Length: 277
Image (cartoon, rainbow, N blue to C red; front, top):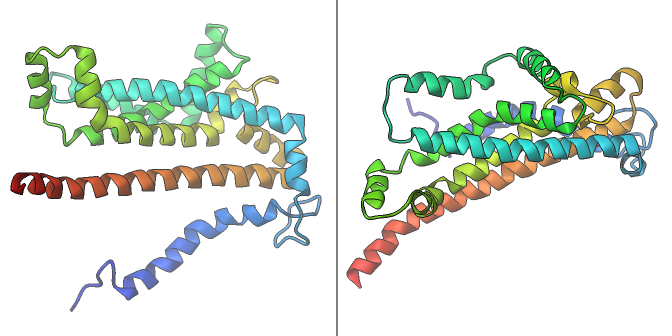
């Protein structure tokens, strides 16, 4: 009996229901954002941009959007620096407890969000940092570090540690080794890690709910509170924005992956052409 090839029409047809099941519930918020009604209804009674104009003209929603962008920016910078540095530091090294160190780095991925939120709340209360966007961004950075670490580590999988040792033995300093040996290899992983960190932070609710304050309320927290008391199409507008951001991040990552694979396919051809020439 023949197996269905991934490119076979039957395999494509079988994947359509799965695709619709995953995408349609999320995509519904986009037309709802253009509803003229004062309440969330689907399908929309009449298409209009009033809800979008109201969203961008509402100081409370703009403050929440700004807080989310600030927290995400902090999370991206810190997560990429820490996760990327950890991946480079562990690359090609074996020592007792290496598995434990790796487990600690990726632990935020598996620890329940409410446990992390309570821990962050107690910590930032004790150091007097609650009330601004900074603790939210730092907390989001902690839960985003595993993504940056794993993406950079995946990029380093094809790097021979002997190249690093050779560069060092030839007189290259730590900065030169990082710039000319590590950075070209880990650049796609850093970009992917930054995209993951931004997506995680911009969409995170539980930790931001614990650390919120009147001057530091993120967009998901604003959505959560308004759903309980004031269910308007502005919530659909903010949801559509989050979906758009996630989609753009995915498309950028796909473009990077396609470009990297194209370069990988061209390198052997270029090398062969140089040898024959």
